[in-house]
Structure formats: structure tokens, C-alpha cells
Length: 342
Ligand SMILES: [Zn+2]
Image (tube, rainbow, N blue to C red; front, side):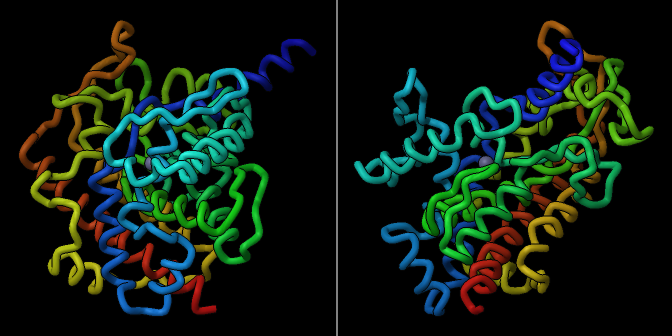
């Protein structure tokens, strides 16, 4: 009985191993996604609605909020925001600080096996790139993963009613702040698709054969969005987070034109997050090609890896990043239009 209990506990904890400092697209990417959506919604009824919900913010600022919340620390029963990044300055009024602290408090230990900072698990899933779609049956999905959380946030924005479980979102403004951010993360290939590795560096499939021990896989084989893969330039996750600086954070006419040219999702709203996640998993197949991976290094706790063709990889990465950022901006605007037109 005790052993069973322990196993259950381990399984629960394994679902929410925090990822450390990963912040998809960093601030630049999120700001750019929001800026593209702002441009698409300018002078539309949905743009007006967006202003009513967000008050002082536009989507380019709102898109950074969920990462700024990471700067809320817990000290006993006290939750305190401590500034970490200059980009978070727009959220440092007394009211907005209180909102961040209150959100962190409500979303601190509400996830499976949650030991603090549950809201940091809302930004990703880790579906093996062997899969061609998202399903709750797969290893690397969980009750508070990015697909589930985005679904709850959409529900709150649609109904105006709070949800309390398994994520806690109190009102439409909070929901839209979360949506604006997660739409960016949803389109970062390594935030949804994942590589699982054996200790010798050979890829393994956590879902096949069925019935493998999830706890062991999470401990021994998960690469945590590529944070556990060390390539020249840092963890692979960070290589994908960083956009070329020259792209800036403004929705240039080129970005806006590219966004308008993107096909719309045109699906029922509650199906959209899983469709986008499925597409990102397929993108991750390509994003995770072209690596030579060494056996696990116990000292660094990472798999060292190199690019077989560094220039070719960089070109592929930048092309995919551009496509994904543009797509995220377009879909953020489309989603809000879908929600408010009905
Ligand atoms: Zn994020």
C-alpha cells in the first residue's frame, strides 16, 4: 500500500517538473505576436472589444504578462512580485501588481503534485515528435498543459464566468492576458513537440510500446522542451526562443501582409487549441532534425549535441520561427474575432 501511494505521488510529481527559466520566444517574440494581432484588429469591432477588456494594454504588452508573473515569489503566506525584467514595467502599477500576486497565489499549488508555481506549467506540453497530433493519452500531456489551459482561458473570455479548477482564471481580463501569451508559446515548436532520449543519446518513443513507466520516462528520457539538450550557443530551447534581433518588435507592413496571407483555422473554437498543438507537433519533427546527440552527461545533466549543418539549421530555424510568429499573431486575432462575433 505504501509503495503504491509512493508511486502515485511520484507519478503526480513527474507531471509538473518545472522547466527552469524557459520563456518561449523570450519577450521579443511575444511582443511581436501581440503587435501583429493588434495591427490586424485595428479599427475593427473586435479591436474595440479588446480595449474594453484590457484597459490600458494592447496585445503586444498583454502577451508578456504570463512571463512577468514568474517574478512573483512566495514567502510563507505572502506572495510578492519582485521586478526581474524591464519588459514587465507596464504591469507594475499597484492594481496590476496585486493582480499578478493574486493570480500566482491562486495558481500556485493547484496542479497535480503541485509544489509551487503551478502557473509555470501552463506554457507547454511535451508530446513526442513521433505523434502527428495532440491527444490526452500521450506522455507529456497533463491537466494543466498549454492546450488545456488555453481551453479554459477561452471559456472564461467567452462566458465571463471564472474557472477555478484545474487552473484558476478569475475574469475576462486575466483570461485575455493568458491567451495573448499562450498563443505565442503554442507556436514555438519546442513548447509542444518533444524529443525523448535514452541515456546513450538514441531517440526513444515514450508511447510505444504502450504501458511504459511514465515516472521513469520523465526522470530518464524527457528533454524538457530541449532545455536538457546542450548545443553550441546554449540549451536547444533557448536557441529556438531567440529571434533575430533585426526583426524587432513592431508589426511591419511585411509582417502584417504575411499574416493576412495565412489561411484561417476555421474550426469550432473549442477545437482550435488542439488543432494548433497538433500542427506544432508536426513542425517539431523538422525542428528536431539534423542534430548529432552524444550520450547523457551526468555532470551537466544534459545531452551534448551539435548541428550536422549549422548554417542550414539556422536557415531552417529562422524560416520556421518567422512563419510561426506570423501564424500566432494571425490566429490570436482570428480567435478573438471568433469569440466576439458570436
Ligand atoms: Zn510562456
